Image (tube, rainbow, N blue to C red):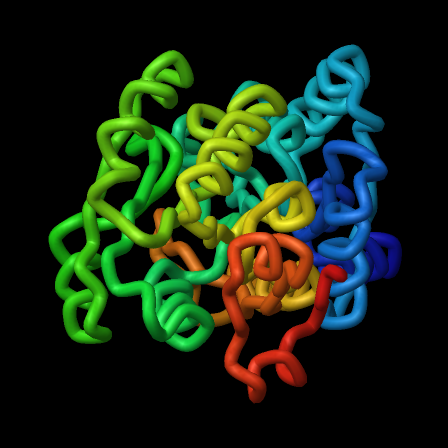
Amino acid sequence: MKRLSMIGLLVMAFGMGPGAVRAAETVLVLSSDEPEYQAVAAGFKNAFAGTFREINLEGSDLKLKTVGEQLQASPPGVAVVVGDLAVQMAKWYLGGVPVIYCAAVRAAQLSLSNSVGIYHEPAPEEQAKTIQQVFPGKNRVGLLYCPAYARINEVELKKQAQALGLALEITALDSIKEVPVKFRELIPKVNLLWIFTDPVVLSSHSIQYLVLQSISAGVPIFCGDNHLAHLGATAAMTPDQADVGSKAARLAQQLLGGPKPAPGTILYPKGKLVLNQKIADLLKISFPAPLLSQAQELIQ
């Protein structure tokens, strides 16, 4: 009888045994050692009030398979996946597990079930406000994006832009092959080019083309992508990756115990203002003086 009572106490102490302990586990899966992923991880660690296991896929498809099979055999309570490779792992192996994705451009296309996410750019309406502040004389804005990757409501975004005094000309692309033609059609109509981060619009080849052509046309580029910000955009509002991690930590704690966010919920990170003085000088553009001191990064 005493032995049975002791077993009962142990079961109560540990939930329902080892399986229940595993069910409450949180895993943080990074796609690789990329600085942006490490910054997300740092933000998560600073904000998450609990224990978790960190896994780095090291950019390896083989490790994706190995880790995916291990997690499939012993599912965590919550998985926080950072970057496209980690999101792909979750898609293939973590069906039924609550997933939080971050810093993943392809997340929208992969359509994870039972997931919530931190978007890979600051909110479009916040970017539009930044455009108005950084480029007060540029009110004809051309937007390039791929609907498969960028989640926007065109009608709503046009209304928000109009309220800011911006006339928004939206060009949707289905293939990177369309970039030259669509760009040539768009550029005579606008005095500023707004580019969303996605693999259809942005690649090593298309970035070079877009930057060279926009400079040739005298049209500045605004974006939400840190890479493009350093390769020729005039200004950018890039995601604060530490804030991404912090928001992921908050979502994870809600999923583990609390008012749970509805599947499909998307949060937007805070933005970091990046100004490229070199490109601005080339285009003879002067940034408003207050913004120069507010910028988190000034490229000279």
